[in-house]
Length: 627
Image (cartoon, rainbow, N blue to C red; front, side):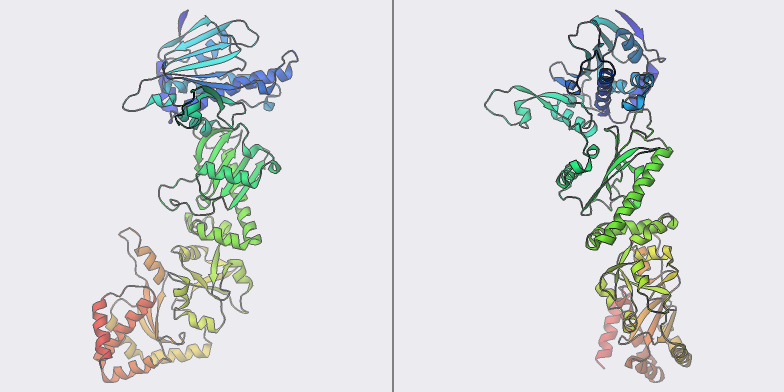
């Protein structure tokens, strides 16, 4: 037995492999199991191409053995095994992938999927191991050899004994320290959880002996505690089964178990794509909003598998932010991974898959909207905010993709409608899409400005979410029809003759209106009479880009930035209060000041704005009532 140095330079390179490439120590088990699967694949492939080898797929398995006394974890396979030369070449040369070389040697190499590409996965075991022994017997050979290393300067290879073909990798775990509990890998439940998370769909049985007490989840019974084999993995991914082989209940069970949801998903859809970039996707739309969905800690992303092996639990690159509510997975042999198989490289395959998935989700939502409006409205109640945020964010880059997925409450239809449905039912000559904002539909419905539109049977979209108006301002128009807030000062449904009449009224009473404006102060841009109101005496409208509702939203944000909408106090010229104000201007300007302040406060309250000095207003009201 002779000690040899690693062929890939030195301990420094090995240290880099062990300590820098991998970020999660649990990954070592995935890598070792994947290598074991590759070894079995190689032998199984040989059995298919050589008639003298009589083996069935059912003959193969991967076995995990835990020895708590020796503090060892052994992963065994009955695959093709390695000769002395191969042990030296494959394990003595860092970054030499035996699986990749095997695949390149075969003319029909696409017919067999081997997981290993880089030849560094084996060395990840040194993250948890103080020493590793690899005992292997090559298929067709009578000799076995053991490779041994502590991961420092080198390794040894010696002849040994092994009754069966295949490879045993024995990991001697490091001692626990204050930074990490290595002994957890001696816990059968911990091993089982790691296998189910990363290697559940390895196509060969992964077997581990568990005691009868462990099989009963730790309960202590009086009978003898014997060991029994248990298969840890399910082997066949649900997404690789034919659609007609999977029931709705099985999809629902997979979803609730995988994503720890107590409710079944609202929608399940899968997609299989072959071509330049081959992949299978299985996607779910939850039936309710996750409790942390709108929190800063929520992580979007789909699980990414490569040939059934999980390489990323959540891959954010596969979902745009506005579809972040979607859960699910993608399995593709074509994605380019980094050397640790933990991180996606920036490449066209990833972008292509992401675009395809985005298109699939959008099509599914469009189908739901068209064929099952009730279900779509439930979905929109849960995740509509995210779609509207998608319209607003990135300077409106995605507005064309999302605008037909938006729905809003219609004042005329008393239900949710799309923008297309609004435009399709426009009154003749109407070239605008009108909307009104507020805290609830009922409060919006009681706004003074709404009355005139209702009387003229003009539909209004009611916006109650904080982001609604921002999204519509980014959209600007739909099908050539511009969006208009009915609370804007310049919105007028009157005829030219009516407009001329109100203009004359304001000119005639300019001194009165200027006095009222001065009484209020700089909080209003203007005071004027209006004929847009029916029964209400006053309303507050806005000028410029910032509406009253947008002011409330922006000022509620946890920043030092505050804005003020430029507001106009409008007085119903046909209400008795108009005559009262005119009379007071001639007879009692002090009383007029009091009336003005009360009317302004009333208009603010209607809009949901705070009254700046409620005590003063309360005293003014009491004073006016007592006269």
